[in-house]
Length: 155
Image 1 (tube, rainbow, N blue to C red):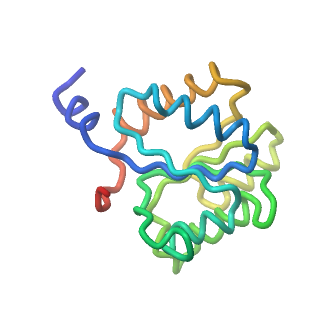
Image 2: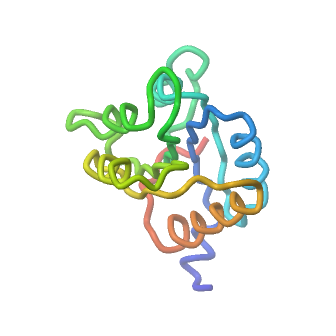
């Protein structure tokens, strides 16, 4: 591991996950606790809550600006694609935040629509805790170790 990679592991990264399935959210929370990097996970249950979190509205008035957003495609109220469109809109103040789309579907239409709306990655949803650990390892090895994420205020 290079010195740069070690330094990056010492930073705190705020990761915002929009996930409506309670079991998947629990697996994510547990898996993030095993991360080597300082990944502070924030979980919301749907797209509307994600937008409130980003805008520091209601119960999220002191929420940090995330360095990375992970969105489940199939959610109630405001689905993942609709949420992605809001985040990546040309006039959005959040369009610089990388977004990973998660889905249980590998349908070409979902994949194309995600990338057409400026998703930074599309990944198949983890099936259980072991898969979630592998997903976290992927985040660390790529998004933390190799990629330069935008730096925002560390809370």
